[in-house]
Length: 263
Image (cartoon, rainbow, N blue to C red):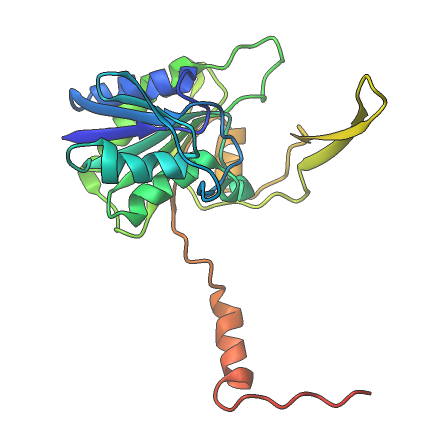
């Protein structure tokens, strides 16, 4: 078995080291191809307007000047001598749940693997649910990651699906269970722009996340993480809304509609 590891937190991230240990539970043929610097929030961005630099940082280990998507694409097509059997992306510093999945570079790395025909899993370690003094419990992902990944590999999943695994912000002994979930949706917007002033009197903006919890129903990824369970969500990139598609076919199918007269 050959595994490609990537992330969006950068080549030196603690979570990437955890991911490597998880991968080594299955094989010694582990390749690490990750961004040179943090690319959180990059989503599926491709670097199209600048050259991409690759730095060899060790055996089967490369740092890339681009995004997680760039990393997987370059890794499979150029840097590896043969394609991997699996792509593992993470372990992200923070949860990737609900609408976060459309922003996440961690998810994007897995999606690029899937697009290249490689079974892919994104892994994230939740944080911020305990007091600020509590460190990120990387040992939780390290403890349960091999078992969850191993079971997913054992049962398999469709070729157009990526698996999104989130570990709760708890010590390993406090984790309650594993739950297969659906993607949730928050009842408020958590991203905000804070306007600030620099030392020269010029204004700038800093984007961040509000720490306000939602009130999600049972069965979604949000609720599982809130309640201390490992969340496993099968994701796919078909964003078609089936009910609206069905409704529109009855009014837009066939002849091109004439422009409505001005009132």
